[in-house]
Length: 246
Image (cartoon, rainbow, N blue to C red; front, side):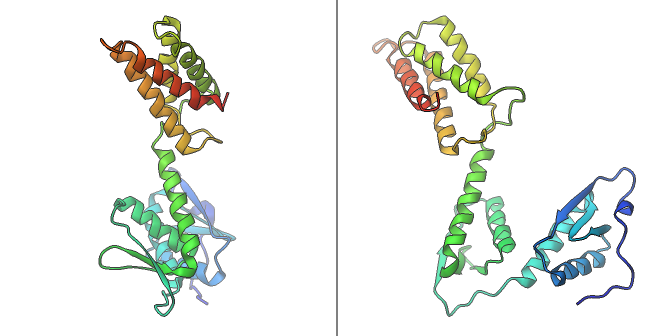
């Protein structure tokens, strides 16, 4: 167990009057692990304080503290037992940010792993289910980030309702000017919405694609041969997709 020559710094003395503070929770860490982190922070002379298992630090030091936390996690991580069955995941199709997130999650969950010279991830077969869930979680989070930044004050359900009713009218008459106007406003709003709570990312992506298809068909106008068939088909597809939420 580590001992230190000076007492911990009081939380109110961390940073200056203009410095923002951050709090990291380490409730699940053992006392020994927190002592290792304390030693790493002192070595780097990073201002910090402890309120029980909660670490208080300056926002400007966030990256350095993250590196110290990762270092302690790596020290505690069990080695991959090569005598046991293993599972290999190919990471070459992922970008560097996604790979870093995968490795960070493995560290946080204490899952032993190795990355070989080709960039493939190897874990014990016994951890396969946990690693699969980890990948699913990160993929879902990445999907959510691909949607809009959010539109304060706008209710997602009302936007979907406007899309549904305008598409319902447009499938019968693409020349309905009020339906076209309502759809244009709803489309402008829906592409700015972040993924609302309770909606699956796959549905939201499919709905956005269907709304984009209808918008493109309306902008293109009637086809010399097929007339309004493309817009009618797109309106029908969007309506059917949204019907289960109405």
